[in-house]
Image 1 (cartoon, one colour):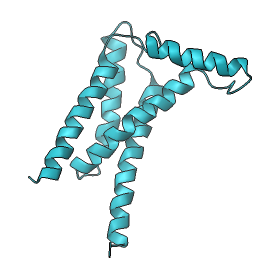
Image 2 (cartoon, rainbow, N blue to C red):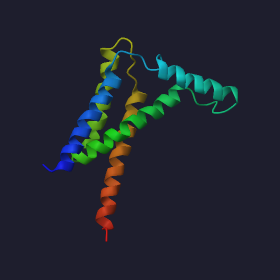
Image 3 (cartoon, rainbow, N blue to C red):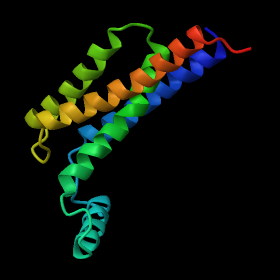
Image 4 (cartoon, rainbow, N blue to C red):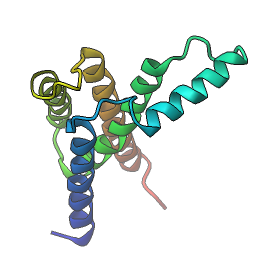
Length: 140
């Protein structure tokens, strides 16, 4: 195994661990410092008449997408199979089922499966598009 592959695999393992810690801990999102900060910023923006349609749920949905994009990128770099799409969606489903059935302070939601899966798929798509471009337009 070459050095790049080892680094990519280690990065995937580390980032997967990070995602699992963030998603499988009992702390309810929105209740800590970050939640207070997000709600405070939203309150200030709303008081100015800005982004009135944006609430904590919208920010969380976008943040979930953002958190899973790097996971999709790293997974696509390490796993050379189209089945990676199924694995990313299955991981998201597992996380939400775990939250719904094991963690009484968390809520497993279908919209989180959707946002997590979208982020993962976006990450995979970026790697696939870059790879396709390199094959179609080789570097000189």
